[in-house]
Image (cartoon, rainbow, N blue to C red; front, side, top):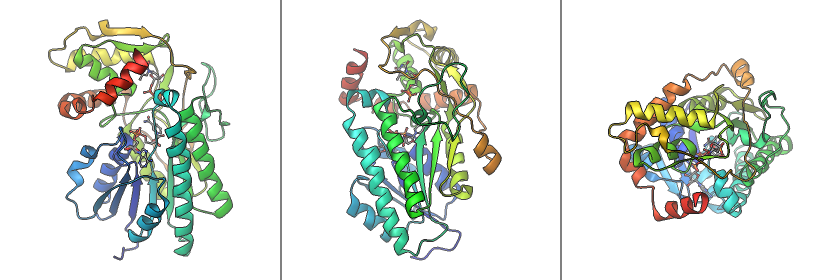
Length: 358
Ligand code: NAD
Ligand code: TYD
């Protein structure tokens, strides 16, 4: 198979997860002639259903496999003539990393290392093409926790991860950085703030609250509810990643954020009010009566905030969505896709829920 100069063959790891599947849709819609290959192990967080509308496309392929499987990665890069690797696959939930950190080290550190090693050899064998890219998708949590008056995280903020999740992502970021500096492998790192939107697994704050409101279950707010997150609609994250792949400079890091700092309690209250307005026949109304303060998460980071000046000034990217509008779209998606999330409330999920919330 030969590709025209403009065409890409893109390998998307973790493409059956939340952000990965949004990105697969985004890329397939914007570049319908590109080959899109998804590699995903389909852990509890991966869902083939997220990609069902793409399955019939000729230039779309789904491969179930582990990013730690070096022979599989070597084979895939060669056979599919990969020009861009967009790496989303990860264990991604802080509370699960507190319950059991092993999988986080395995996938996030060893898995990323395996991909980098394989890509390094492949890129060398291809004659080190200048336009190949290894995009490493990471999080703002590697920077640690901010006090109320601290400036937002910039690309030069020192790393200070506090959870096994963020520590494993920090380790993978350092490897991606080192592969550029040592071997010139064209890696680019992005560190993004909290995402929300369609296909978000029920364990995370926003989908958990939406679903619990629909089921009339308590809304567990950790600690005093004053922790702050900087929320970004997932579609905006996807457009930022597209910009970084097309215009970003190898060896660079770009912070991505929505400039939307909100206290958890304010976000949950806004969600309750929007659900009262948008959802018919709620079991408990007003939904905010369900808000329950519960024991805090161990080591709970107080505040995250992203300074996204660099990606704006150097690459011309800005987010489009406001929190309220993004939340409306998200709620409507969860209302219209009840089969999707009902299916995920499995025994495994109930056991997990029991462990975290008692
Ligand atoms: P997710 O948990 O929804 O999806 C992760 C996907 O990776 C799943 O489909 C899972 O099956 C797959 N996967 C896990 N282990 C694998 C392995 N060993 N081999 C192959 N596939 C494997 O996560 P997400 O929220 O979509 O996050 C995607 C990426 O974005 C992660 O790297 C995460 O650190 C980063 N990120 C997430 C957020 C956020 O708010 N969710 C914010 C910033 C950055
Ligand atoms: P989460 O969605 O788990 O993302 P992260 O921990 O990666 O930022 O949580 C977002 C915020 O919401 C975080 O401060 C923890 C808080 N939270 C709750 O208060 N209750 C919950 O049930 C969950 C899942 C999160």
